[in-house]
Amino acid sequence: MPDIKIKDLSTEFCLKKMNFTIKDGELMVLLGPSGSGKTTLLKAIAGIVDYSGSIYFGENNVNNLVPGKRNVGYLFQNINLFPHLNVYDNIAYGLKTKGFSKDEIKEKVEHIIDLFNITEIKERYSKNLSGGEKQRIALARALVYSPDILLLDEPMSSLDYRISKHLRMEIKMLQRKLNITTVYVTHNFSEAEEMADRIAVINNGVIEQVDKADRVFFKPKNKNVTEFIGEPNIFICSSCKELNLYLKEIKCGKLNFVVASLQKSIRKIAILPEDIYVSKRKPPGPDINRVKAELIEIKKNSTYIECVFMVDRKIKVKLAADIYKNMKLSKNDTTWLTFNFKKIKVLNGDM
Amino acid sequence: MNKFDYNLKGLVPVLIFFIVWESAASLNLIFENNFLPSIKEIIVEFYYLTINGVLIKNFYSSLLRVLAGVFLGSFLGLVVGILMGWKENVNQFLGLIISLTYPIPALGWLPLFIIFFGVNNLVPVLIIFICCFFPIVYNTIAGIKGVDNNLINAARTLGASEIKILFTIIIPLALPSIFTGLKLESGMAWRVVIAAEMIAIPTGIGALMMKAENLVRVDIIIVCLLLLSLMCFLFEKTIVLLESKFTDQWR
Image (cartoon, each protein chain N blue to C red):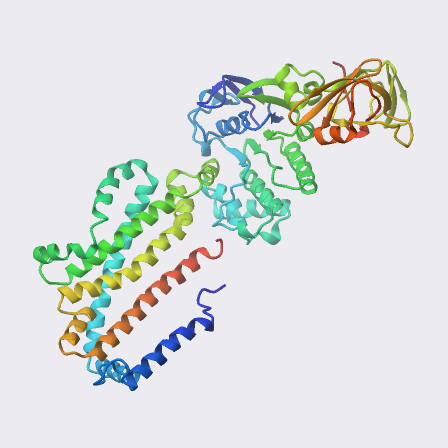
């Protein structure tokens, strides 16, 4: 499979002189807020939007290739199944245009219908399909002609959590199996973290950072990245004790944490301000992942309240405006902070 | 749901209409002297007109004119509409001339055509052609332009050429709108042909009605009117049937 090199890519309204490379067989996640240019970049790679600059697949400049000759599989955000064709014909469409023989088409379509477990609905039309089914069919349609490159635009946006979890695993497995260079667009960091080999953070038509997920999280390159992903509280660990294979107890100054990690030693952990809970009284239950802290600063914002607490260091916490109002917090209050166990991120490797 | 599943409710007003008619006719409520024929008299007259061939001959010439005009008008309208909806420069090229000729009522051409071509079958066919052409053109353009651009892009990434996209994606998706145009014109064609025959053409149902008027044969006029109503209805329903055959499964 080829890599994708993007050189000085600009579009009229959106992208500004982008430069980066997506490696051969890699799953690159484009992460950024709405309107940042993720979809436009995907469309430029597919060739369905006008751009200046160059895009290379491997050694080939594809600027002059029409979309159909670029051999990309594109899963659109709004799915775009052809309403007048049934499931089978939707999947077969790409094969027919590419001139496969009747027998080959039948074989390939049947094979992928089998793989995606959609044999029972192959005669149906789009109006009679659920969101999850449409998504899988659109994916099958994009993969059936063995594209060199797979482009996925917010493939989970229309699905509920349970189905999307399942489909994410399926996509990840397929991507590994086919070793297909993939670009995956999302605005959700945890989705990006789960899927990505690397993440490219896009803001305002500019690539802000291209990195592994935990580097983006622990070492955000600039303000635009932290503004979108959130600026985590980062704790440097002074000691680490193994409770069992999965659980580690670590000390960071005055604070004690129990975290889930397979690593032998842990150097840094991080937690986002919205994943820390505040209570005025000591919460019941075992004394794990919580600490007494003093509220020293309150910053009001339109949608949330940012509170800064003091232990032996500052800890930032984001509270929803209504929760903040109900708690009647004021400066210098002594409160208890509880850290969401599942949301504590452990830095992998060294940084 | 089958579009022919008229429920019985709709038959009630029709029945009431016939009852009122029949009572008015037999009791001479509106006119004296049996001016308004009864239903029975209509049926008898229908039978005579059929037997002696007058009705069939005239109906046949009207029908042929309608079929020829509708077919030519729809076909050319479809081709022009598809080209105009698909290619913006064709649209710009033909847009003005079509906008300028569309407002002229189809029957408005009649005196001109009679002077140019004389009284023959070409004239009503041309008139029907004109009356069919425009609704088809406009509805086809609307249908073609209404196709979601995202679907066209999807087809492009799947490797389809522009001409293939036109035939496999754009035209099939424009069919509902095209059928709306066909439905409009199929009824209209009958209305126009009758008008043309009443004014200028000596054969056909319209001409028969004019002759009946001269002889004050109300029964023949009513037979013709009922026949017309039936034909418009049948034509429109045929189009509806075709439409549901082509689009119901996915719409």
